[in-house]
Image (cartoon, rainbow, N blue to C red; front, side):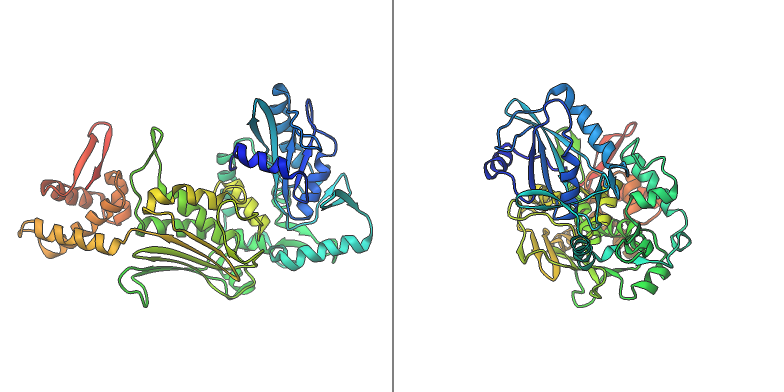
Length: 477
């Protein structure tokens, strides 16, 4: 989760409580009303609960010995169907603020209607209130169902319609990302309910797997039968800008689609050598992990417009159908995060493939200057959500490399080998710091062939080897 700055917290305290902010005293333990507010935020538009601040905005803090215990208690209770039904996993964070300890509970809006201790709560600018009348309850259901189409129930969708092994694979990824996850030991049916992908609509009595389940796990032919317009186009348009140089037409479920899109990015986008502290990190992974996940989990799937991921020579563009919360350019600090598909978003967070709501844009802006040389990235909220990420112009880079290579290699190399060497040199330029095995996989050529080409490039002083042969090294231009 994104860490709040002191200035951000000060601004929140100055503005005070409202429809999406709640303060609660919690010196030694969790206040009894905390989960009534959680329930109200889930049922309305989400928000932040700060433990350790009173109603007037005075920071009293949380006792240090109690803070860790309270965070575990919040996480445990949020997964207890006897307290919050349906369950909604929460991950509180401890904040050190001016020698005081605060606990922040970020609660996104949910696509489902939740109960706390069997009661439904909603939120207004004046605080939480219990929803008692049938008319009020029906209005909440109507509000949710009209906006969150991911909750559409398919009564004739069965687990046999899922890709074999994908549910178990997903559970293993979740457990690896968060050991001792509350979903770890649940029977499969309870897992589906806890994840929010199997539900009962209390307004209609209909029960079954939802569109979220279909999109996460469904076989391609089953998805196409329910959503025939569903597809994702990944295109490379470096030279043939009218059509494409490479294409991936994706119609599988979004768990598998995520992997295909990240592989497409790895195949065609550079990954600069970058140190964060003492560790090398992948800027490409940091940036495009967020953007690919954003396109998948916030897309409006009832809209027939295909999602697109297009790599040009000077930019990357993402487009997907959207139900806008407002219209215009999104920048860090000028928008309130609003989930389009909260169940899909929650599942991707548990998988470790997305951050908590709202952090994706911050993450991209954090790294884009180091990756692209400028920070002119565009996030535009409209009926089509559009993202434009600048790139260094790799057309000119590739041409320069090709000219240098063809001019510098001796005439004894045949034309076919020249082409392979040229391609490998471009790959090294775009992926500095990779080892032979990794370069072989990216170039999609045998390991022995890659070794031979690397030797040719090294002998002609086009690349150099760094590191030790014993412990492993890598190649740079």
